[in-house]
Image (cartoon, rainbow, N blue to C red; front, top):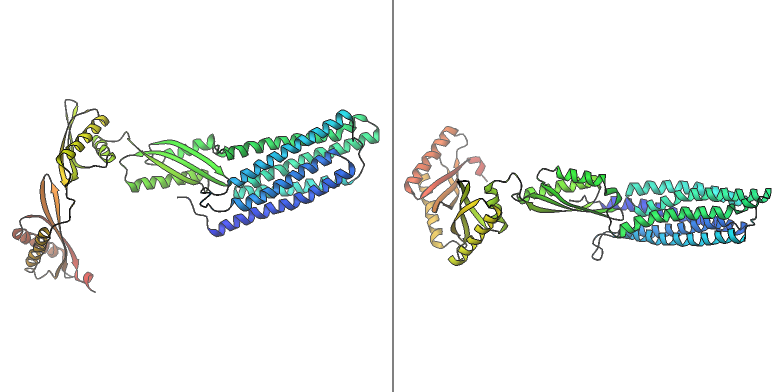
Length: 485
């Protein structure tokens, strides 16, 4: 039911994600080196904290690149649901690195503020140039990553895009901190000398906020929590669309989870228990389509639960009980006396079954029907044997003689060119075995239908006079050109 992604589409998706991730790695490497060199040269904690932040982003970008390489692999014997979870695992590692950087930045900032150590900075224009370059690069790659992530539904690339958007704000904070620190030194304002470590604290706060959001998404994905996009309104819309499918009585359960860029949905639907297998398959296909309208490309599994519908008649309920026990009944009649139901039915059993076993089977079936339909006061079950043996030669010979007699009767009609495909069947009706014969009859192409009907009717009469044991003769007329070659 799930749409199959062509190899070309899969290769295009993988190439786009890989290209975006690789570009992010190179950009993060260059920016990290520039910030680290500038931070060491100027002694700015804000720049060093930014270098640490960019270093984490470099590691995260490298992990993202690796996860993109692995996550698009198809399912195999060890990973039946694919490798999408590697993206969540990489995001989890990234979260730990970001929290560790927060601890280092906060510790160093508090030390400088409390003990007034390393507050003197070497003035240079390079930190401003590096930060402005960093803001430009982060803006460009965050837009690129976000576009590819949305297009291909990649959790890892979207996480990277969020990080780089926050890098823009943290770079602004450090930029302002450096400007305030240099101003304080120039104008001899001691309080402004604390601007650099304060800017570092702001950066760590931004990192902590991003880490918290990423941690929540990562843990939810690893624990198979319901994806945020399928909660609330989307879930209500999904249940509404499933309930609207003709043949769905109830939506008993809807479970969804996400693995990388792929969604998995598990749906349990109540369907009328008298449905044919073919109709049940049609409803399953409609349910799969409904889910994929909300979760494109989702792998959907639909479970059907046979359910008694309000529109079920008594006859339907009786047959449903028999079907539940894998039994075959026919000629069911129901009559009402004094507001109580009296049922008569025919139960088919194997011809080799003993009377004791057949009676016990009928008794259990009747008890199940009374539990299902308390209004039933009496059930009369006629037990019939269903032939399970191969037809004996004596019966085959009798059928051959009937065919000979049919051809002999047809020979009396010059319009009949041929009799073929003669079949003899037996029908058991109301305790009586009845023979039925069917055949194909070849007639001239230009014979008027009125004469065709007259010939066929006359043949039926002649054959029944010769074979009165046959209750019915079915003749299919065919033109002569239809049987040539």
